[in-house]
Length: 145
Length: 73
Image 1 (cartoon, each protein chain N blue to C red):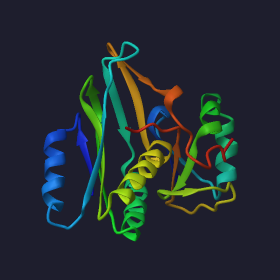
Image 2: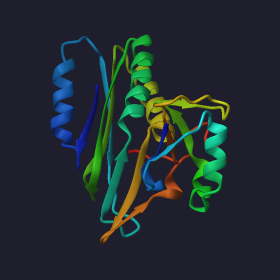
Image 3: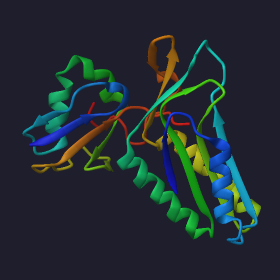
Image 4: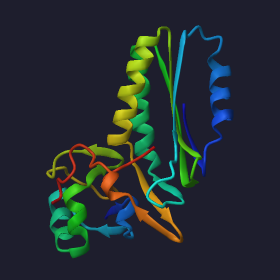
């Protein structure tokens, strides 16, 4: 399950919905990760561009990896502007036992940061500034240089 | 024609080019001063599949996307 939302995520609603959907699926562990916008460097918020076709294929590959471990992965992300103390990202793993879910959420979020085709901008006043210093070149970048 | 899209912060309008591989695209983009910084650190996809070689062949109707450094979450 991959969800894209315009603006901030309704965290309570999304987690509640995911929990209720899987409550009787016999998973012993449900491990969510919620990313919230912190007040730092004078920003008013963050803004996101998402390239959906490649995000979807990247996520499908992770769904297959989860399935191989008897787990499922869910993710929600924002498009556009998200203001301070709101949330832009939720990932969650359900699995029979906690160890699989704990390890999987770590691997998933790390690869998400390094590979998912999403671009972040700082919002400062009327400016939308690419967060270049916090961004990571995707593996295999630079073949056209 | 091959459509070339520049994603995220590259902020450049798509272009249509008569090219048959990524080597030709590289030569064209290397001549664009504003693109130099992005060529260093952008990944490339053809028809939404990531590619790792400049020898990748292109056909009429293909879509090439340049993906600059990412930061979701």
